Length: 99
Image (cartoon, rainbow, N blue to C red; front, side, top):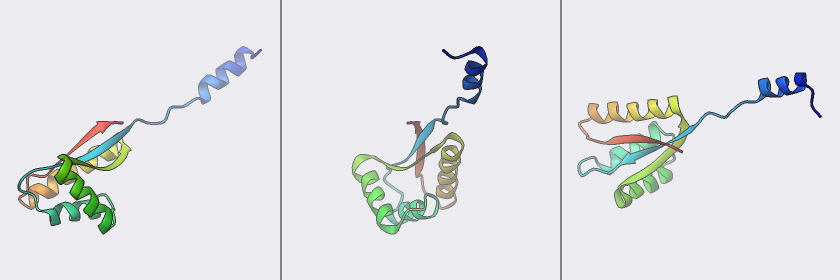
């Protein structure tokens, strides 16, 4: 049987992994396929082939999974997509959902 001190140590050393969030790109009728591929390669560090596959998923299924991140990183990725799209005149949007 564990003593009170052992139980306190167990409680102090237990930790939780941070929640993870999926980042998706959403389909629209105006953003070029080339721009989506560029976003995926530069902001999400995908290879050309991975980026092309995700871009096609966005086109066919209305959204495509870009990656899974902690809250702060996912939030930053969503904001980076929005800013870069706006700067280039595209309505591309990214969203994040808790895993």
